[in-house]
Image (cartoon, rainbow, N blue to C red):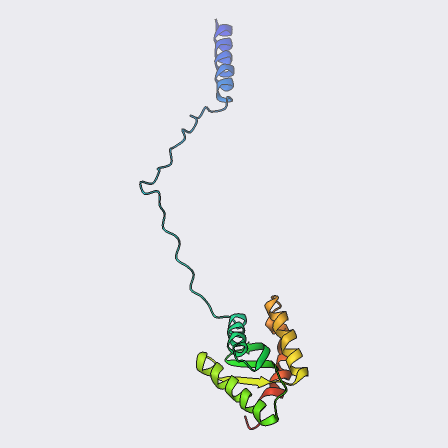
Amino acid sequence: MQKRLVMLIALVLVVTSLAGCQPMRRPTPTPTPTPTPTNPITPAPAPAPQQTTPATSADRVVRIVNAMPEVKTSYALVVGNVAMVGVDMRDKLSADKENALKTRISADTKRQMPELAEVWVTSDPDLVKRIRDLAGRISRGEPITGLFEEISIIAKKLQPKGS
């Protein structure tokens, strides 16, 4: 009888241990229906506030200057609150008329863009080319920090004497 009892206990232990090793059954999740909106028209997201970056400020300066009939084309760099403008004239002007035009370009640009404290204008072909090249590099996404040395050279040449 004792042999039977030991066998019965052993059998119960084996059966319970095998039952314990089965993976636990979990109910399958039922998909929850997504609620459909009662109003099918969803409002458009509000536009992000427009930030003024040097590139957009420079574009505004160029549009203002190019609107003048004496100007064939112009290029601009805006660093902080200073705009450096290179201008190609339509016709060769006398020195007095050219200086008057540069003064008018500076005044009109400052009037239309009060955030600019200074607008320096040049028609020197070398400086115009340098401004054009730098403006192109900035508009292509080159970081302005890598161009500070060249910008400072241009600024020194354009900065009005006595400032």
